[in-house]
Image 1 (spheres, rainbow, N blue to C red):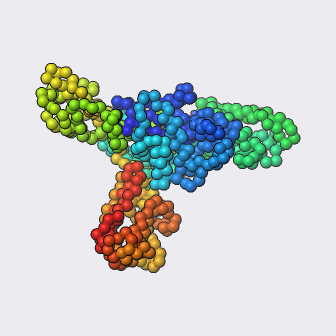
Image 2 (cartoon, rainbow, N blue to C red):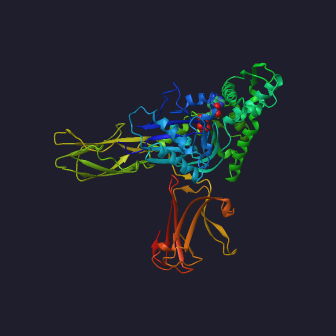
Length: 599
Ligand code: ADP
Ligand code: MG
């Protein structure tokens, strides 16, 4: 069993992908159902006794759109669910996402058991959306789910491709325009550490909107120009409309035309297979030019550029301070997107990484630095006479990394040797004691692998349970920021009966976070054993300048009179510690001074 997670998943709105870190490189798995592709459409379809995920499900949209669901990532973290006609039941965004994750597991042909994974989320995902993503991972059978923000993943993919020598300290932007969401993040590189300084985004903008616009603004008007329909748009777009299934056919053709326009200057859309209100067979070919398409999406692209300008201004930067804009997401294949962003901002557009797999690849690089936390199954673990427990940092910017190990078993007359895989380091044969301490020299900007081998007196290899030692001296990330303020709801002494927000963690603070010893006097007492007495601690997410009721509740703790060991007087101190893990688990610990009790 490997001791780092190694697997990374891009759980995308439109497409998902899975990658694995293997000895310094990342492999992206290909879709076994879709020859030559590395991605899986995030679409799920239901038949009476069959669930289909991916391209086959997408095709089913044109036959039975009410039994197919896509774009559910936009609803992550909401109470909404999707009604599915064929089974007459509903499915939540979490359940649908877990189907996609389970399907991605079938891509993996390396024989691994997938119990731990890094899953990416948009930088804009709040705590509830993040937790919903984690839940989808658990439902798909993963026992450990670590979350990573998509712009960091894309940046890691880029930095690991470039290697350190070619990287300059400075700032860059990650511009991610996918099928359903737009995200832009400002990244800072300093001494090989990568940090997200700020981000903006629109959860409701992407290539699917362009497909919609092509059908709505270019195709439908041309159909009704030539044929007689009183309400074609509604009959197509409404789920109960007469031509709803036809709408999905047109959407698919619009997407194909859009993709053609990325390499050609015009594309055709065939409209056929239905009759107008006078019984005429609809049969036409609509030509769309690249300039027509560019004009159509211009307002949206300019909207994304405005968000970038906001970020630049907010961080007191000038466009010249930004090295480049890293283009990610399938929609950045559109030439106009690249040229417009470059032209308006006067920052070079960087198209060096594959925009559809970069996020999964970066997630796998990150996964290689995250230890597995799942308790190892002893029955799977090799039983060897010599057991070695090693400890070292899996990521390091130092020239050497300190390696320590404890040995158990009969070590009489044994020796050991540590070798770096590239042959650049050899500890030589040394006598084995009950401890090993070595400084391991690292190759800068690369993954360093070492093997520790134990030998007997005749230099025969003695089997041990140690795994290869892997240390990443490439790009590390110094953190993922929170997208909104995290506050406590406290009594407002200036407005009796009202509450106000107390800022605990400010937007863009870097995870993990811990705020200890937030202390204030209680505004009421509690009698031991009295169930009517209680203290309610409410953690909210949103702007700290807003009213508490305008923010989202993300967690609470209630302490009742029945739980306390001693009466608590009004005005006595309560101490609260709040922490948030890198994967957004929130912990609240409360200490009641007067009762000397912790909750
Ligand atoms: P997401 O991150 O939302 O899952 P992707 O990054 O996979 O999405 O992007 C999917 C979007 O990219 C789709 O709307 C698709 O039509 C669009 N797309 C893919 N290839 C091209 C292309 N060559 N030209 C234009 N758009 C493209
Ligand atoms: Mg994406």
